[in-house]
Length: 263
Image (tube, rainbow, N blue to C red; front, top):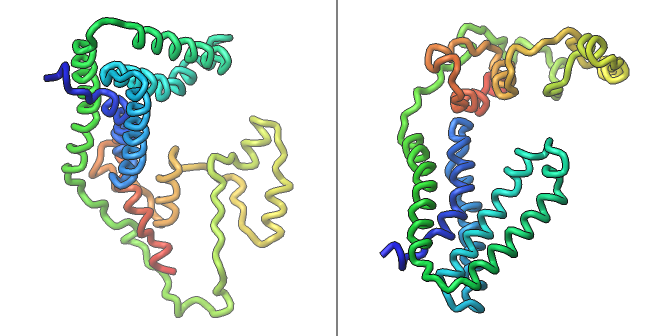
């Protein structure tokens, strides 16, 4: 049956999308974000398969060529990233030439072959299905996993009521975060750069500039979740181990942070 069933082109096309989603499960990426790209690549792959079948009149050959083309398309960026530091080999010119040669050679080999491709079809079905399952299983397991809710932060803080704030003090609030932007002292010491023009401009406009600011967190999401909830995130260590890459509680804090509730 596997020799007659042709699924590998669609499975090969689905794998990169599912792999990317599975690799970012802890980033709180919703399943809704997968539907459109997955449907898009499947439709395009089916169209390519149909266009190849029309002149070849051999569905197995058309399917094998489609899988080759899809594989080469999705693998180019990864190969380029892996070899970009290698002289000549990592250049776009060399890689594009190599990909063109691979496409032409693969096309000629498949079109001219007289062999029955039933065995190759069955093998590709199994390999592609295994690759897809390797990503579907953790996706399903993660979706079924119950996550403990993050406790509300800053419960010890006593915020002033709006009535305690003079009417003259009410204004729009602008909160600028110069993400991965070193403070003035660091820029001068390590990069020999004078950033005083920007900082002086901000201060002249009435902004407070924290000249010796240092980040408490390596990641932007943690830093913003901490500042906008006016609380440190140490209590999350009671729920998740220190080396956890789980971002969902952080994003929970960013969706309903204390500053927005107070304002």
